Length: 186
Image (cartoon, rainbow, N blue to C red; front, top):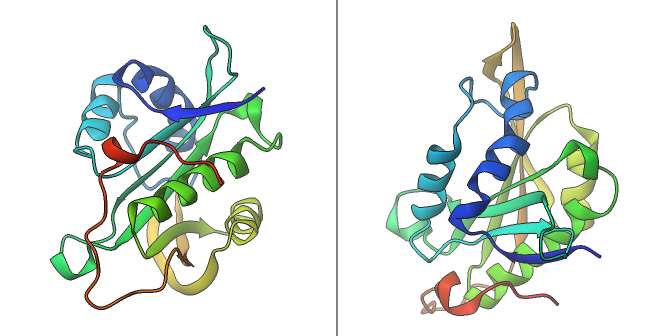
């Protein structure tokens, strides 16, 4: 059984290990240096209780982390504070087992409960598996930047997918803190 829970600082090593192959050999991440456990722990802490970091585990007391998802500010400009950028990575051993969809559904439900209105996903192209996952959970293609990143000797396009989490209201309510909501499931 796969369970979702808020990520803790103790998960940083597993998160870094899941992410490392994407940095080293892939083009889905534009980082070129693998972040270590301390860097991942710092990234989690920088969410400051507002932005969710969620892990999927085997559900057992000693179960390992199968994947993670998180949200960050879409932009530093204050007027964007109701929009988030989302990220998700699944361990190689857990690919195509529903972990990604479970994580994304939990993340989206959580973001909705918090009061965010838009989620933005960036996808290095081509990547049909990621496009399919995003579209299965409600994202729609919003645009493409051509040849915007260069990694492993090639220029890479990046697509933006957008998911409306809630209809914007005027005036908008401030988003709730993840620390106050926790992981929400449907």
